[in-house]
Each structure stands twice: as structure tokens, then as C-alpha cells.
Image 1 (cartoon, rainbow, N blue to C red):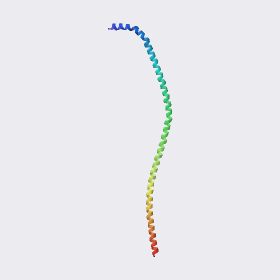
Image 2 (image 1 turned 45 degrees about the horizontal axis):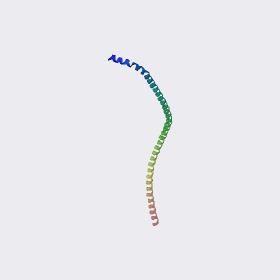
Image 3 (image 1 turned 90 degrees about the vertical axis):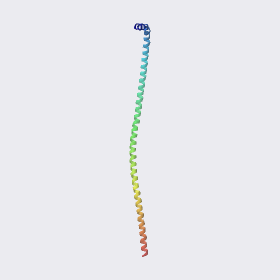
Length: 129
């Protein structure tokens, strides 16, 4: 078996020697093609990196503005909460004053009614004596 395989290898030796330059050219062109692809990918990566850097720089100002707006909104929200608390306290005070006014009005009407009754009684006694 080995002698037969060895004989076949000897028969193929001239063909293999002709294929070696073809294989060498194939591998060189493949290597050059891979190098070209690698350079193209590096250029693309560099371009993307610079684009990302520009986008980041542009977004930094937006982030700063966004944070400033958030701070302003937080201040406004605190002021609105304080105003709402003041309004609620004022409403409670107004309700208390309305009750007091109603009570005072009823008392005033009662006092006026008593005064009118006393005036009528006084006039009655003055005019009949």
C-alpha cells in the first residue's frame, strides 16, 4: 500500500510544482485583499469615531441645557407647591372668616331686633304716660 501511494505522489510532483506559484499568487492576492479591507475598515472606524465625537460634543450642550431646564423646573415646582400650600391655608382662613361673619351678622340682626323692640316699648311707655 505504501509503495503504491509513494509512486502516486511521485507522479503528482510535477503537477504540484506547477500549482505552487498559482497558490502563492492566490494567497498573496488574498493577503492584499484582506489588507485593503482592513485599511478600509480602519478608515471607516476612524470616521465613525470622529462622527461620534462630534455628536457627543453637540449633545453635551444639549445635556447641559436639559440639566439647567430640570433645575429651573424643580425650582418652579417648589414655588408652585408653596403657592398651593398658601392657597389652601388662605382658603381655610376664608372659610373661618365667612363663618365668623355669618355668626356676627346673625348676632347683629338679633341685637338690632332687640333694640327695635326696646325702642318700640320705650315709645309706647313714653306716649302712654
